[in-house]
Length: 312
Ligand SMILES: NC(=O)c1ccc[n+]([C@@H]2O[C@H](COP(=O)([O-])OP(=O)(O)OC[C@H]3O[C@@H](n4cnc5c(N)ncnc54)[C@H](OP(=O)(O)O)[C@@H]3O)[C@@H](O)[C@H]2O)c1
Image (cartoon, rainbow, N blue to C red; front, side):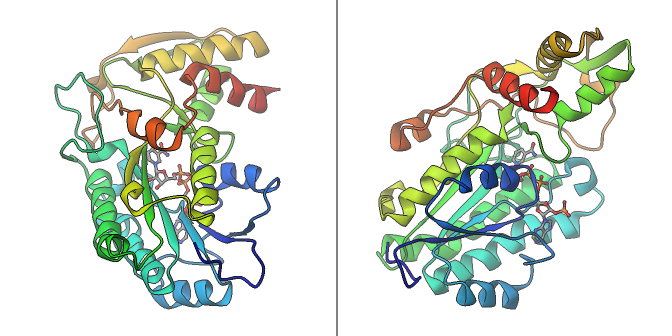
């Protein structure tokens, strides 16, 4: 890939950089030769097409990693307009700017593009998407908008390319997430009910950050072919329910804090919600392993790493 900066160091723009994934990428960037531009809404609003264009031009961006999104799944049901703006329209704005300036784009999507249903086999990238709520619908539209803007130019050899990583159940040391919520509830309560009838894979944002970061550097070296561009699943390895995840958080944190909390399984209908969450959203990672040799840690191993960082 041709570098736009004066020297050979690639310029990599991160949008939504204050979130979980953006913050996790920042921890890797220190040891890199690449030049990173970490922006959140205050520095670069991804819904502002003129600002996006100007930023890419001014900083001679080679690679854009979009970590920004509307991620509050429940709130999205009542705030469809904002969810659509951030999850569907903004990726189109970014992709069009990437096309114009020949910037390699990395975008993040979700297991919620699949509805779950009665499925018991992990989803491949090629399985038909069928989202059930506003979050999933708008995220799927975002994927399509990126593809629509870039596919033709990439196939014709006129654009360096793009990748879309679908992930799930993201947690980290940063921001709000399930692990941090559970730790705080478990510190206060003797007992907790957690649903056992929704199954997926917890994913440490640090693991996703590693794959995104490595692929950005590969793209900078022109090592991602047009054929390799497209959608990839990435979660950690293994399968569990939210209940199993919570039990693991309780066991591992008890080793450190000595405080016991009785985690009990319950059905989803005990927590009424406007959103119909997928009952099964396990993703098949064969493609990302085969194409990029991605390291996919087992979810419990990564959970321990995150808890070590959070609890010392
Ligand atoms: N979290 C999960 O469990 C999960 C699961 C599957 C897929 N994903 C996907 O993974 C990606 C990263 O998720 P995450 O958990 O790291 O998200 P996050 O923590 O919610 O971070 C998103 C960041 O984007 C910022 N942002 C909001 N509006 C913006 C705008 N107009 N311009 C620029 N930045 C803006 C947010 O700022 P504010 O906080 O101020 O709004 C926040 O800092 C997203 O695409 C998400 O859909 C997440």
